[in-house]
Length: 278
Ligand SMILES: Nc1ncnc2c1ncn2[C@@H]1O[C@H](COP(=O)(O)OP(=O)(O)OP(=O)(O)O)[C@@H](O)[C@H]1O
Ligand SMILES: [Mg+2]
Image (cartoon, protein in one colour):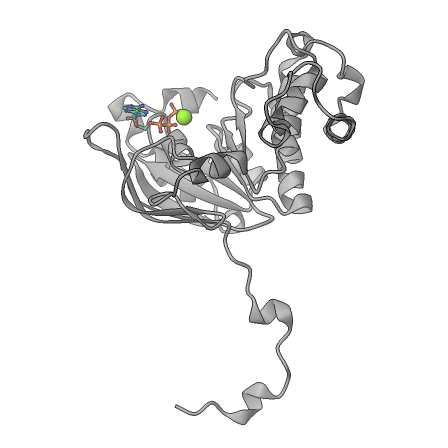
């Protein structure tokens, strides 16, 4: 086939020649724990730099499992999962550690060390690059400077010396986000990061995560139990039900009615009650 010469009238820009590649690429993913039934079945997911993708689904639908499969904590029994050039189904020695070091994680319960200072908690995000050091005294001046800058960015530099346990839930989640950024992550996975926070705090933490995705170009995958929060704070939504992906679309094309399919029949099955109360 010959291509008409007119198509070559203008030289292509570098961006056109190199379309943005997804940082995460999951195809037909299947996961089963310990030879049991499939808890993920045929999931496809791309995460591009700069976007925040919300993961919706009732309890047990496989949200955490999908995140765990991106860090080698869930047994992949079929399909493929690639993160930043690594094939999770075929990692060479040492690569799993590299994958985990490149993924910043944020959890519902913050997972801070309560008796340690806020600053030290953030510094632990750099442990993988600092090597075997004394956690309390051994970080470099450059690390400390960066940790303080990150605390400033998330709005709690004034709490740097306080023990982490003395902070409110919303503040602790900001510390956890600063710790994740300290890792210089290529990807952030946030598993129900606002489930323990009041609505106002929830919004501000999700706004922060969305700003990080946009400004730093780090894709953020965030699981949520509250549908309106997903509609407000994401670029795309992926909806799981019983391990199957029933929705995957730009948020601008979705509304509550379109997402209903993710929660359908839950009441009859005794699930979804928590979602309705949320
Ligand atoms: N380590 C495990 N061993 C066996 N089964 C597991 C394990 N972890 C999860 N499962 C099962 O996998 C399914 C999906 O669980 P998962 O935790 O991924 O759901 P979820 O959508 O994150 O739920 P929630 O909203 O309650 O956090 C569930 O049926 C669960 O019981
Ligand atoms: Mg979960």
